[in-house]
Image: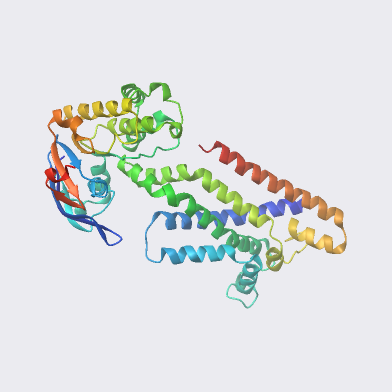
Length: 208
Length: 220
């Protein structure tokens, strides 16, 4: 049970951090015109396509004892796992937010302005109009990170009782021949994935 | 509100959408803006509504240049105008919620009576609780006009309000425009069918390729 709770906590926190940066970044890219916008979009798409183990390696190099952020002592802790998962999910959220806002976002802003909305009301209107797409982006990001194994193991260390989550437990127990635990946790992961997909389907149905 | 446009130019990807436009709109005046597609009519309305900033020239609102307006003054100036686009978008929410948007933006409370009145006027009372996204093209256009009229603007900017809608909606839109003019609102209307408004004796401005031309030159 502790493993399940830790998995949900780490991936939930990682997705929350990714949401803060990813949604803001996506909104800026979609709603503003600036020089180098295409470069930023290309960078985000490349970042999204990066294999998770490469992100795991980068985070490991950052957090190792003599690395640039080694003094934080985060390596092999849930914090390191959250950080890696946040880095993995950020471009997904940014790209999905950009595509959600790019088509209608500018028109929403212009219409709100034209009707006399101030800055705060305009922002609230954009958020309100894009809420289904943004929630879908968050759920997609969460489903991506909760299923991650290699990266999580690299920076978390798969320490029993501290950083062992569902995916790393499945990998370990399968290698040990303990298929029962692996299958049980696999079923839990499938249920989580199913709930997320049902939520996305529900949101798409609710959205006019 | 008096609007004066002096030497306004606007470029899109290096192409001039507006070139040296000089115009003046007196309070309570009615102007019909004519011209083929791509003439710059919509761009001009968007510049006047402070949605687009011109690359050159200046727009004056009661003598104050747009560039000199502070952010709060830009909002305050926008609140004296409303702009109905050719294909308006509606926000997710009920029809009455959409109609009241401009009133909420102005901090006006207790507006439901006004909303009901305007919905009755545009014939959308029976759709008050309907999600606005489910309206037809004609109903959406009427909703857009209702949410623009409810704030009682001094300047009413309309971009081809009769396009893509049914005949009943067209005549309703026309009657709203006439009502707005008679109540002293300045109306600047982009249309391909100016004949309908001739009894109201509008000033006519013709455009082509981002420039003002002689209205006689727009005749087919």
